[in-house]
Image (tube, rainbow, N blue to C red; front, side, top):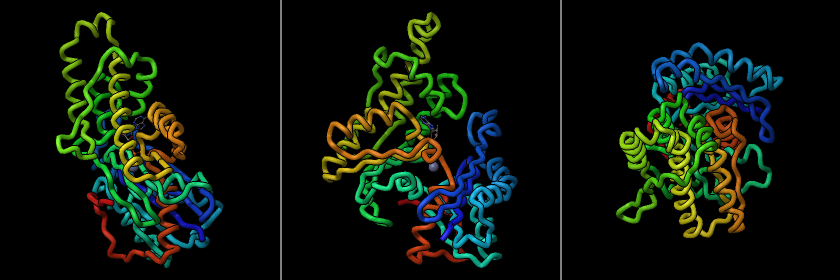
Length: 334
Ligand code: KG4
Ligand code: ZN
């Protein structure tokens, strides 16, 4: 069975075909250039862009997969979490396509797409595993026990990791999207010049908080204009110290989840997982403890239709279908 997956939750218009073994196509149209001038995603514009692009993106995904709609067994679509307008475009399009062609139809949770994305590239990847989902909107650590059975162990109380990267980039005068820009700058910086504080939860909770770090970066920049202007401290040094703090926080929380649960497999997914330093630190941490480590290739870290087609395939196989009354759910959780 071939499943068509459609993803429009934020600023990537994507469609992919997955056949239970392989990704046959994964077409991603990034709207970055459209939103760049505004310094961030404008939801209304994103929705219109999805509407304009999605039909051609779906056609291309089908033709790259060498399949007409006739050969597609089911259609899967992200119905949340994400931006309301963009989600509505994807869900309406997918429903209409499924209805008109009489295909099986299922709604997919975007976070489940990220969480399970390592299955797309790794034959030896298995449940149970500890899965970190770090994206623009989420910093969650799950214990994934089986398909559809996930325990949320830690999440963000305020800014998500990707959001913190994007905001830090703005403060440092780097363009949108901030994550890749900050990580590029950090590679050239000295991460030992500044020490930003790591948030400690008063109640000893596992949750993340990155808004304090964001404020520390802001104050540092405001109070050290002289040093920055003279080149004593560079934007790259600040980026490196900021990134190091985020990485250390993620490693620390992950370490606790692994220790408490005894789980021996770790995966990091979502847009921020495209960060090379984060991946390397976690890999080192895992190897030292003989824990299996998995991270998707970059194209499968940021938003993509393949991860939605994968979860869609697994849902349809189990008879988990959605009706034509499926609605976009911007605040959907797992
Ligand atoms: O998963 P994703 O594509 O979209 C959401 O579901 O939110 O994640 C996007 C986030 C953005 O905040 C972006 O800045 C961040 O991932 N990101 C990165 C890197 N590449 C993308 N953050 C840090 N380092 C990167 N290399
Ligand atoms: Zn995402």
